[in-house]
Image (cartoon, rainbow, N blue to C red; front, side, top):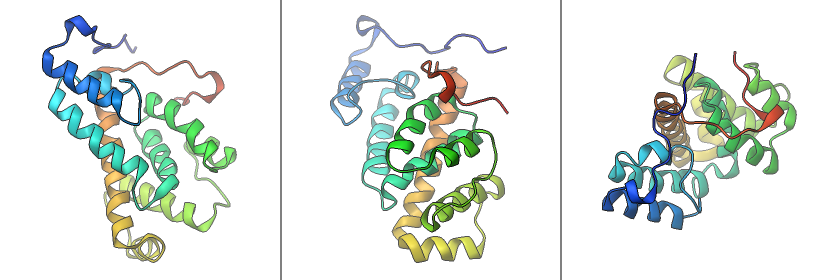
Length: 186
């Protein structure tokens, strides 16, 4: 049985000066607040700052663009990570990932009828998670669609969100109540 957060939010007065500085840096960025993985990450403030900057690039400026949201969902499902799911499933829907695709991934099934660019992302992420590499065919399809930079950025997205999932699964970070949009247990 899962227990409450092992690393809940820190009150401002309980933070060290370093934690407070990084918390303010994170809140001043595109996220606008300290939430999700950054709550436990503040226990290592310098790491939190580096993670925030890496995540900012991967989420907002990578060669994958808004398709990063699909990759994030594949990683969240692989790690059964409810916080990442609750944050990114609504964003994925807003950027054009079909509700049926999101539902299939949530239930651990392969989505059907994906547009080519989404199929490339899905295949790359699933192979990387399952096989710890990608096949030559998937590599070539990914390279043809997103180039070398896209391959590296997509690997970065997978690694970064795996790292965040590990942190939150260890810390048992609470997911917001999202009702039917919650990530089901498999």
